[in-house]
Image (cartoon, rainbow, N blue to C red):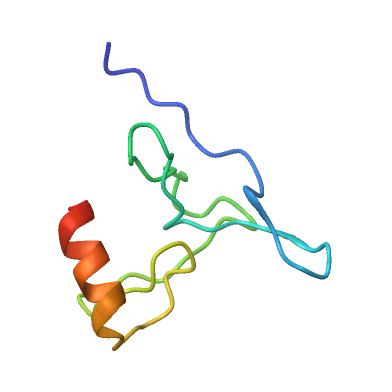
Length: 73
């Protein structure tokens, strides 16, 4: 079954209670990331080839994060 369940809204809550969409947050069981249909309001994110921090998608130069991401991929 290749049916995709597209993201419909926020999938993470910040410490201050704000709900946000983290496009790089992986499902703990499948390691899959959420798919948002391009242009969906509130579900925008940036793309690029630089190593991202696990979960947030922020650029990361941390060697431990790099090791984690390589092993995850």
